[in-house]
Amino acid sequence: MQIKDIVKKVKQIEIRTRKKTEAALMGQYHSAFKGQGMTFSEVRPYQFGDEIRRIDWNKTARFREPFVKVMEEERELTMMLVVDISASMDYGTKAQLKREYVAEIAASLGFSAAGNNDKVGLILFADKVYKVIPPQKGRKHILSIISNILTADYIPVESKIDKALEYMMGIFKRKSLVFLFSDFQDEYDSKMLRVASKKHHLLGMRIFDEKDNEIPDVGYTLLYDAETGKQIWANTSSARWRYTFAEAQKQKLRALEEDFANSSASFMNVNTGSDYSKLLYNYFQKK
Image (cartoon, rainbow, N blue to C red; front, side, top):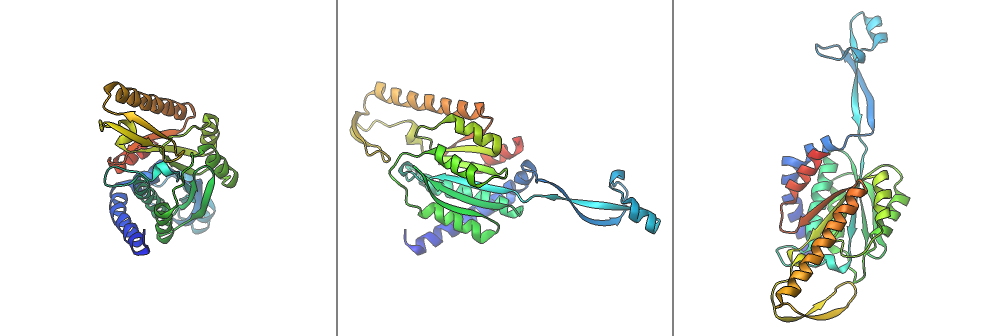
């Protein structure tokens, strides 16, 4: 992509996601993820309906009228976007590639966090961690994260989710909101999910294209694995072959859902053609 194309794409994503974020997600995000506690803000005169336990007795005695302490939520939450940049994520048969779809979801999450004065960071990984953008606040920072997801080199290797989570836990000690984006095509150690979920709020987002699950009848065709480079000829005209492939994908998804459930982590299966804002809204409501 040329620089002008990148800038244009980032602006388009910002415009689309800003509307969705402000309309629905920001408030639900705030409600779902509370801050680290309450901090003192100010003292003001008592008003009808104020809680008695908030009364500042020292100031009340001094001025001979009731005053209350005003407390504010201390947020300072950190959101980490952990994004798979293996070659299978640079694929799509609809209007968007998986990585473009991830960039848009990341933008919605990022703007929701920024609107609540939270920090957002990014980890790009494949067989290892390739790039880390430390958590910061603000719109410009979110735009930089979007750009990095769009322009990363998507690498022809098998992704190692374990290494990405292990790295993140080693660097970010404080409890964070972790959104893990991948198509989960490769093997991983489920133990690492359990460890990560105990330490952080973890949501795994499987980003898939409809052709990941079912291959259409296109006759004899050469299938190519973008990550391993392996090639095989397949008779896609065979109904039995297509059924076996589809069932294997369903079984893989069931195992994935079970691993996240057993790890007390959240999981979301997201088609690149679906409205992700509704899925996120429901997720925030449940939290």
